[in-house]
Structures are given as C-alpha cells and as structure tokens.
Length: 327
Image (cartoon, rainbow, N blue to C red; front, side, top):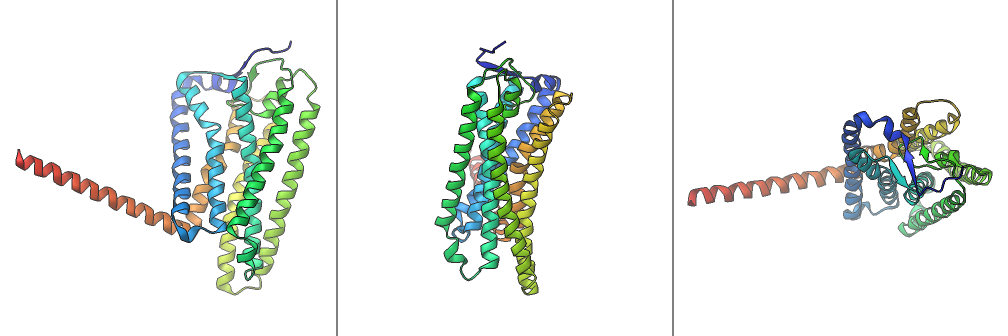
C-alpha cells in the first residue's frame, strides 16, 4: 500500500528508549567535543597569519565539514532522545539524508585535494608556491563542494519521486538506503545513479590519493634523513585521517551488505553511527596533535586564554576584597 504519510518513524530510537537519558548525555558530550575541538582548530587557523597556507586551509575545511556532518545528525538525535520523540517529517528526512551524503562526498574530495597538495609540496618544492596558492586551493574546495551538492541533489530528486509502502525506518536517522527499502516502486534508477556516481567519484579521488602518496614515498627515498623524516610525518598524518574516513565508509558499506540479514535494529544503527561520527571526532585530534605548527599555535592560544581567565579572576577577587573592607 502506498504511503501518503508526511512523516517517518525512526525505529532505532525505540530500541534505546529505556536508556535514552544515558545515550542523550553521551551523545551530547561527543557532539560538544567535536564542536569544541573543531572550532578551536578553525579559530587558530583563521587568526594566525602564519597558518594562512594551503595545507592549513584544507585542514580547516576538513574539520568544518566534520561540523557540518555531525550537525546533520546530533541535534535531531539529542532532541529526540530528550523528548522521547521517534518521528521525523518527510522533508526533514530528505534534508538529513542529503546533508549526510554531501558530507561523505565532500570529505573524500577534501582528502584527495590534501594528497595532491602534499604531492606538489614534496615532489615539486620549487614550483609549489606558484602551483598551489591559497586562491587555487579555494577553487579546488568550491569545485569539490559544487560537485558534491549537484550529485547528491540528483539522488535526492530521484528518491523523492518514489512511492513508499511504509513509514518505519530501521535506524536512528534518515539515510538513502533506509528510504529505498521502504519503496514500493522500482528503485533501480536510484540505485544505479547512486552506485555509479559514488563508484566513479571514489575511484577518481582514491586514484589521486594513491598516485600522490606513492610518488611522495619514492621522492622520500632520495631525500636527506631530516627532510625524509619531516615529509613522512606529514604524509602519515594525512594517511591516518584518511584511514579513519575509509573505516567509516567500510562500516556504511557493511550495513548495505548486511541489509538482507536479520540483524537487530540496534546493530544497524550502531554501524551507521560509527561511519558517520568517527571522522568528525578524530580529525581535529589527529591534525591538532600531529601537525606541529598548528599544535604549537593551539597551545599558545590556550595559554593566553588561561592567563586572561586567571587575570580576570584575580581582578574580581580583588574588587570583592576591597568592597569587604569598605563595608
């Protein structure tokens, strides 16, 4: 029977109803950590002129995308857990699924730009300043974003044309796979479009990443010990971040493959959440800790903030002491 309802039911929220306050608290702390670390990285990069370089702009863009991705999921989840709500409107469902998919496309695109940037820096150091300027990296970023939005918009449009035979989504948020499962019409076009675009895009971006890092490692063999150590450290930092993202993609792929298996709804939700949360959670940590210049600037900012708070506290205490003496 065709679904004419304007909303869907998120069954994953029903599964965790008994411990919803525990999950709500945990989710809030994770989301707060993501926002705190990400905004710290962004603030430091934006306020430090010495960090206005392509690599740091790309790191800033990566954590900003992490904020976007996590914010497409956590606020709705927190509200649902706190209010014990399990419904999501059709429009909100499609917006959420679009934002999550754009996040995934833009994430892998950013990693490919970062790999190409490091390739130019290590393999063509004398021409790097002219080949990869701040304007050029911004053009790459906006081009990648435009493609991501366009590709996802087509997928959302095709999915919106489907008729649905149910309202019960086996997850704690909306995603394309869950919607296609509910479709009572032929969804072949949607599946072909999604798999074709993602496969081609992933193949191209991963090819750029593999090409870049293979050439970097070959060049590193010819460098001096100190230069080699510095180059490998930078490359390993990017590979670590990329590995976290790939792990997330594998979890999502695993859920697609296990869709026909009778798994508990909680298992489907957990696999989906891991794929969505790990990149925004770990990227600020990886780049904030392993990128030396960025780490030093972050420590300096924190030290200045601590000194400012201490100074204000001392002034406030002094004023209170003076008032006590006067009265």
